[in-house]
Length: 124
Image 1 (cartoon, rainbow, N blue to C red):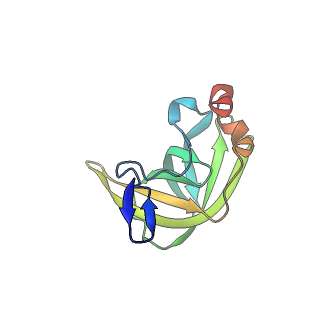
Image 2: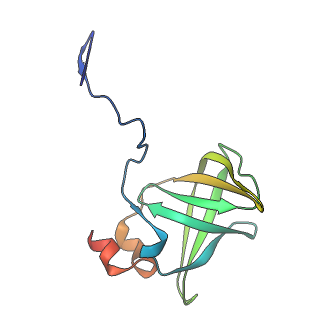
């Protein structure tokens, strides 16, 4: 805690920008990727109640509104989510891959992810 002119201020953890828990790839049943509106295939790194981290062969422009569609591994279930690109950087050079963070317009309930994640992830 840090003292300030208006009283104590709680210092945020500098290395942890996450506001909610995330589900990692080893806890999922989704297919290897997802798709942005317009047909761009992307790879989901992790997903939480307020956003998703993806990898893309194309740069994502910060502030751009996007729609992402998740598919279950059996391709029978899909979940469409909309949000805004909050950050994007080069993740790899060969092949050129970008990693981008999308913030959802509205937080999603973890229950809506049930077709895409294992039972252990939902109960955690």
